[in-house]
Length: 445
Image (cartoon, rainbow, N blue to C red; front, side, top):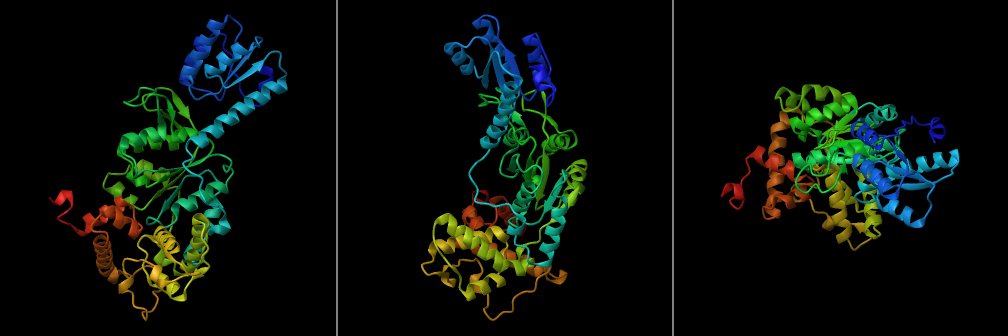
């Protein structure tokens, strides 16, 4: 067996099962081959000991006993495969290769929440404005590397999709692409999600679970809203970036995982570093290759083609045929400020498709917070960042939009956030920033 595997692996041989178990608890391996040649009871004890030491590692049992009841007991004891003696070197290599591949597939499927209707191809990215053309040109140059990438830009501007496109156009494309929203989980759950946990690590941890970094071995981890990670987890993330190593929650064995990290944030990390809420050393580790996605209002040329692309996707999802948009709808889209960016545009189009009864989306099917304040005869805004002398006006305008959405949703924040195309966390931040209150909110009673 050792000779058969030496050409593509680095096998380690242990005659003592307890010694092998101690090694596995410290270092781990890709696969375990267990030769069972004593009595049945002792053999099953050996298998159980190795499985406890390496819960996620494939175990291939070899033996000259081919009785069906013995093989059934071995598989019930959580062996991955059974290889009967005598076997050829080709059989040994094939069995090990298949076991490792099955583990990789299982890891990816464990975290696959749903099948996404997304095609990650460069030509599927709507990049018509000069800013987006320059961005995609630069991103293409680094997609094939393993360097850490930091994506900045407002919520809903497309950071997740660009990150997925980078992964699926790199040499890691056959390995998992795992997305983690760091703002959606409390610190205790996020640590378990990222690094995994051992059985008994906390109340409810009834079995060992591999974390996202472990499951993504060989692939890419997209850390959305990385600025929301607590200082304690920032230290562990720094180690992953520097050493590709970590321990599960409640565990002592060091696990190594070859992952590429793409981080994204809509927060000002430089300000957070100055305020000591984001580690300076971690900032330099994630800020290797930095790309900024401009808000949708600054890429006017992209709005119409994006609308058509999203309409096509929505119609396919809801199984409804809508041919396009009425001219006044496209004009309205170009005049609107899109505070929720592409996410808001997608939500508006999905709602319109569900409501529309004609072959083309009409203005009556479009619901926007400031639809009544948009003058049809007003000139379309020019692309580009706002002038410094208009910042106060923009803040006041954003506050008015939030107030209008809250009033429309009877002051239910989660509903207002959905209309605005914002996350509840982002809306709550803006509510505090503008000092918006309401007597029905619990904190104001």
